[in-house]
Length: 236
Image 1 (cartoon, rainbow, N blue to C red):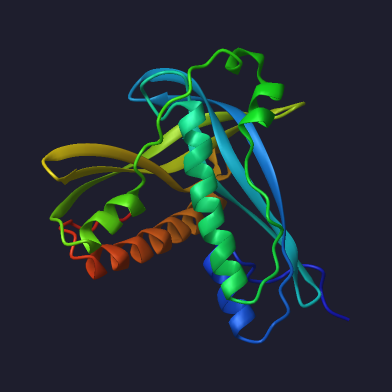
Image 2 (tube, rainbow, N blue to C red):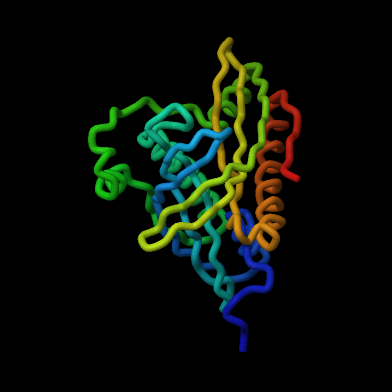
């Protein structure tokens, strides 16, 4: 009889794809969460909403679960507006789902809904719709078109408190901020590449840092392929 859990469970979409390619049976049922979170950034406290996808399924007969943060949105200037964050989250979500399907993993065609946000949080009903922001992959495509692109990378561990229906949980988010210069203009883009429970930092932080650095390494490979100027940064 096989165990119901995996000794070395997947922590990334890339892990699922690689396991499928190795010949294992991989199932996936994504589940979305939109959570209010209190962040502390450079001594400034603010509330935002994070867009999470929990990847739940089995590898052969072994259960797995991991989550990925796709965007962070708030009504102030400390992160993208909520309506922008929905669009950013869906673009990266669809990118991951496409990669999974190309790798032979069946996954439902679902996305985050701004309407779901409005149902959950009444204060969003009157927010002004904003134009979409450029993501880091938009800048990669600009570079692939032959334009000069340079990126400054700033890494930061950000303290936060996630609010669930009946409890709150302290989390530390591993954030990456990209300052991009191209076409005579500078733009900024933030991305969460990992997180861990603050109170379980001794146990969880090492794995979270490994996952974050793996995600950064893949992104740096794309920078190299597009001839983007940058200096590598990794979490320690």
